[in-house]
Length: 423
Image 1 (cartoon, rainbow, N blue to C red):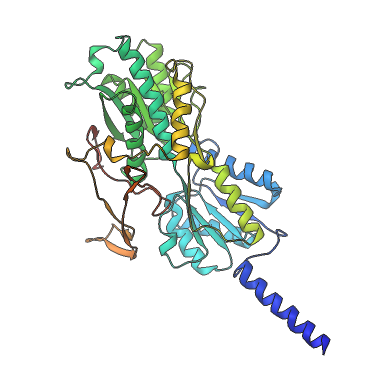
Image 2 (cartoon, rainbow, N blue to C red):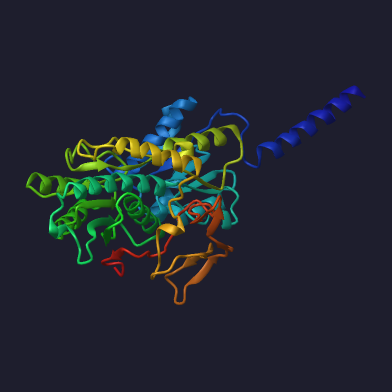
């Protein structure tokens, strides 16, 4: 009788463990392999940041390099699905794809392989896809862009106070001109350039900004050409949401030739190519997410379907300050970073911007995933419509990356002009 009871107890415990660890999960890390699908390689700053983050997280968790399988320069088409299937065939039980454009292909393979976990970085519909093994993640990079804007604002204020800004650098309304090189007119980019602009204005109010889209995430030639256009237009500061060193290099060249212009980069410090022109760069610390992800996946624990963190968890920061930043910048940055960490500073505080001359008190966000190639656009995955503007502790603000991880701020605020958003 005791043997029968023992057998029943063992079977009960085994069934219980299946529910605790989840369908298709492993309770230990033996045989755990990770497949990584990268849109670029180490030469492209966005992908390099992801690769470094994965490697650093794996090292800290004791995951051997041989158990990380790489597929680099993978296009955003059927080749992505092919790469994912090859990685599964190689024994990978976690697949990571780092480009938004990989998302549709990853979703298809996830449906076919329910015992494998799939993460589409910067994606936006995992939570409404119906696939329990499909996940999205993003950092609150808009916070770091805001801080980089503060750095730029400090420089503008220093030069303005010293009356060193040429008349040509002001627009007809007396605003200092700022340029911004964006990849595409997507929410991710709009959220980023708006937070950068608001960071500048938190220090120096009288600025205006123009945005030029390259329609590419990585094109050194186009990015350099865009920088040259802004230099010709007498922009004092040029920021970017683009993945090469093309713009900072062009800015340094112009500065060496006597132009008064400074660069704010992205993903990596630009001091190696813009020694005196670079002020700083907003950075993603992808190791923070990848450590959470790899730890959960190898131990059979729950993976957040939508992950988004910022300064509070150390997931974003800015690079080292350049030699030409304004006096007091380091102290100001520390003050602002503290405010972002404790929540006393809200990047999209509605008291700090207007849209068509009015403050925003409401902004409904439809979280459905749409197919915009159809006319009219068709709903692929139906999501809820939720209010994005919140009030807390006496502040009213647009709550970015809380309804889902991927940015959804698409308000076109006053003071910013898109030069070629139709392209």
